[in-house]
Image 1 (tube, rainbow, N blue to C red):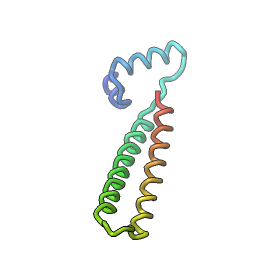
Image 2 (image 1 turned 135 degrees about the horizontal axis):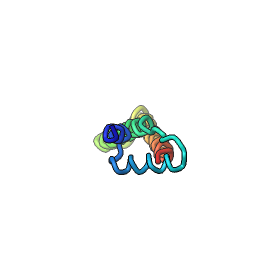
Image 3 (image 1 turned 45 degrees about the horizontal axis):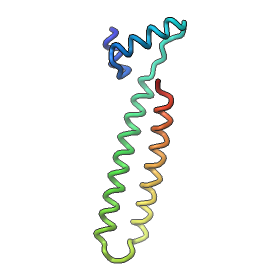
Image 4 (image 1 turned 120 degrees about the vertical axis):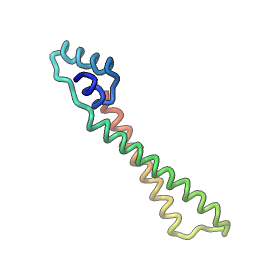
Length: 99
């Protein structure tokens, strides 16, 4: 049961047991962070995907060699940059909330 609970929290069994012992010593309930951990993993994956979009946009702009990129390409690049920044901020917030 302990190993299964530790896996659900994405912690080593020893780390999970240590958290449980400390929570019991403090008289507090062991917090459950599985949802936050899952959210963080999803956000980090999405940020990686958005970065790849940015790389592709940079390659497309470099391939144009026509002096100025079409306005739509610039808009997509700016949107990708804003999205990555928001995802990074959200990931940092989730990271701060995890133990």
